[in-house]
Length: 376
Picture (cartoon, rainbow, N blue to C red):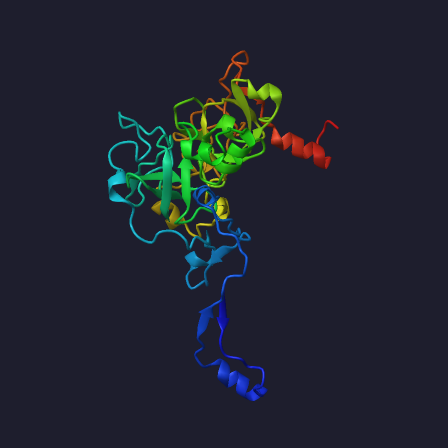
């Protein structure tokens, strides 16, 4: 805390304004008497600082050009302004860039072109234990979430991980996939209490097995099998939630229930990994590109309506004027529905890991709630 030396009590109001423009010096305020010192163990195992969240603020621009009029971006002033760490990247060249397979046929439409990129090698497994310091937060052109460059405090090795919301440079995070470290057990008096372990380990950015995470905790980068990396909730703003991990029946069970944002509840192995927090760049879904050229920079090609094509290119094409021939909407291949696709999974082949299926048929449910449906 800084305290100004100058005092402005006895000056008239006309002179106070002029005096305020002068340079003022400040000195550090003395620490309050009797404040206890932080012990070594608590300094080692301390949570990262809590940072205030932005109030859904987006960066807009003056409409100097038509492309800037509708451009909206999340405010990410904390991102690294330089290039990526070169040894952890490789060039994105070769096949599958334009949506084509190994024989050259287009298997994914509306892809091609775009700016040159380098693929970042992201560590999803996080098997390396020990403390890691966040060197910087970077933008990754290959994903919607941000990535963090970590430095191992012992070996000085660097690695990339998917950053959590609120993570900044200087934070210290750790992975507990190989077990609880001896220093943490010693600081707790040699007794392993699940509540104390969760209070010391379940912090933002730490990677833990699912059985060590308390119920109700928000997690991301969730694995599905022991020894493997995260596969679920890796895009911007996504997360899952531990459900019922504190019950007596769940402690001895092999699987733990995790609720996803879609409403689905899945059973996941208790030795699978997960990272505490929410995936970074949560306002990514609220952005607006502003112009068509920015989509082309991202490698997204235009989407042409079937009604505007020729009869040889689409079932809806051809004819005089805007007419699709009085037929039901179908896809370009002519054998599936235009929207919603064609369900190919057998009803007998049920996913046994799904405890509660996600809500489906959202359109009918919304119409029934508003009173516009036929069946009331």
